[in-house]
Length: 343
Image (cartoon, rainbow, N blue to C red; front, side, top):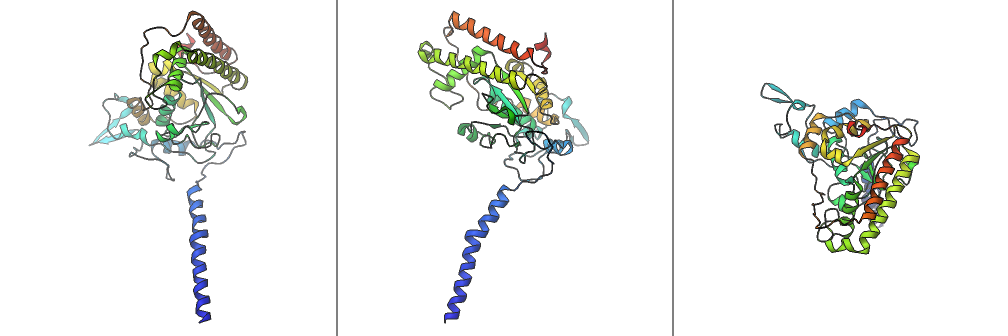
């Protein structure tokens, strides 16, 4: 009888051990394991050198690893077969392409740790950083990250938001200040008209009745101390960004300036510049898909004010800050600038 109880207890202990200890360990290992098909370089901070063949294959369709997020079928290559006719989508208008191509840019994933260079996507708050992240994710097929871990954006589909910022898993990292320049390989600086950026940030901070990134501030607040305080804060932030960029990135080819109005005016050209700066292969299918689906869901509605909220002194100060800031960066920069900016 005693021997029977001993056997039963031994079997029970073994079952408990497998269920409570061994199985969870195996599950955690599987959930956190990532394939490492690219080797480390000696550069600091360390990131894996681009394997163009692999990345080209990935941007035309997901690599055969565990994908974090995939919602639409991919298209292999930039040509599609319609009956016996080969259709080159790069020569077509955006309004006349197969539906499968117009869905391809919905496929976005995270890369294995250390796969990509750490590229800062820096901007003054209110400059359209979230919109540019949306565009970059769709044209590259790789999530962007952030140093802020904004839950609103995570829930809204920016799944790289919660990923540690400097791990090389995301194609770019949102930040409104360069706090750890030694961990950054390159920087994209998104520049918007300061008057527009200040107004957009005021709406985000003081807006009512809506999501954090899409709400509008009451018109009466533009005559309050809160408005004057935010203008001062934005000007200080702008000068800090300019100083950090100039000190750390503007003396070599590690900086790309992207102007918000250029994105609005010639999105195709600007996205090509960005992909080239990121050292990634351009997939024409993804580019067409992105141009067709360029809006995104975090779009701030336009609010026409019945008066100019900036007084004469504020207008003079803001114009000077904008002009002097860009000149300061350009004086020390070898950045690639659009032709419209060179003229």
